[in-house]
Amino acid sequence: MNYTKTIREFCLKNRNTLFDVSYMTADYFFSMVPYKTLLRILNRLVEEKILLPVSKGVYYIQGDKPFDLDKAVKKYYVDDGHGMFVGYRMYNDLLISDHTSDTVEIYTNRIGTAHKSIGNYHLTRVNIVFDDHAKKLIQTIELTEQLQRIIDIDYIRYYNVRQKGICNYTDYDINRVIGAVQYQRSTLVTFAELMEKAGFSTQLLSNRKGA
Image 1 (cartoon, rainbow, N blue to C red):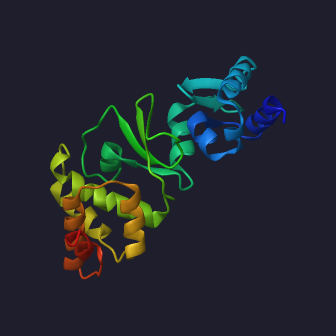
Image 2: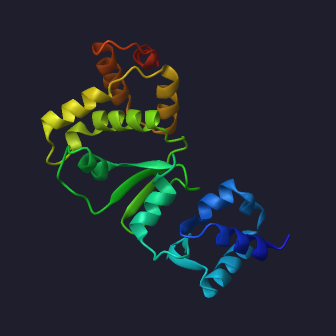
């Protein structure tokens, strides 16, 4: 196989997006390419102006649109079921807090390492498909766990948002989320109690008590 030709063709077919080496080598045919060979090819594509270095192990595949880090990160690591914003970006979007953080936190299934930093973005690998149900569930559990840590919190807004997030989730949905994101035991017990107080059934509380 002509590795250079294959990777060049891939890049030319996927312009205006990121190329994350850790993810590509973990989940695609790129795993067959010797790592040093892959880096030489990527350096060659940088020289050809096909790739633009963004961060260690991350490149932008250049196309007809100017590079915009914020748009590129969201498109690659968040959109289409690949991830979600958490932390203060999430609190701001939910109007729970006006406090801002220099670091933007993202859960994503599109990195091959446990954590990655790109500029002011801090990414954490969460191996789950981020469908609407999973994102809503993660959002509600995150709010439950972080209550005491949120700066400048609007408590009325917080409790309204959290209460709306207490839905009739199946135990399958809950188990796939808590299997992907490590939450404190006390958080899961509180979440289960909130569900049961709202009239929804879950095996989570009994399972955790029996652990």
